[in-house]
Image 1 (cartoon, rainbow, N blue to C red):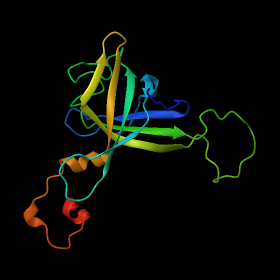
Image 2 (cartoon, helix red, strand yellow; image 1 turned 30 degrees about the vertical axis):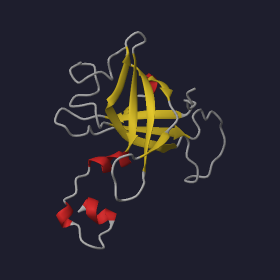
Image 3 (cartoon, rainbow, N blue to C red; image 1 turned 90 degrees about the vertical axis):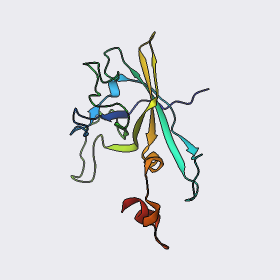
Image 4 (cartoon, rainbow, N blue to C red; image 1 turned 180 degrees about the horizontal axis):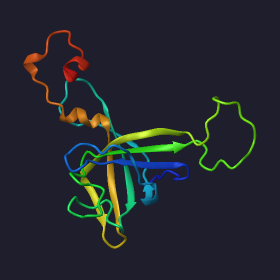
Length: 170
């Protein structure tokens, strides 16, 4: 049985790569294509590690792909021009999705339709699924902590007493 999130008040944005391999300048709202968002999950890293246990988060998103917006890079209509893998996806929640009341509010202390970011991650192209009958594309969005799996550290540069932040970011 799959647990899903109520899509009322949820918005999904995409930040794909441009033709030159850099991220495009603005987030693209893809909410109208979303058919399902799975509940976020956490998995324990199963690789060899010596830094301790950390959890990898992920969420599955199903999208209507009848227009080809989430297809491979060789499709003209696709949002993906350089590559699909590692494009950023952001999920936000609107606190008041349909605020249709009138009244008086003190200026600066109240925000209509404020969006709160609840998840940001990278598309995993290895788990891309396309249902050809229904034209539904399913993407797995990996948490940003999955970048730690790809970080290559020259072990000769590690000194006694270095912190994890020093090792990774220097």
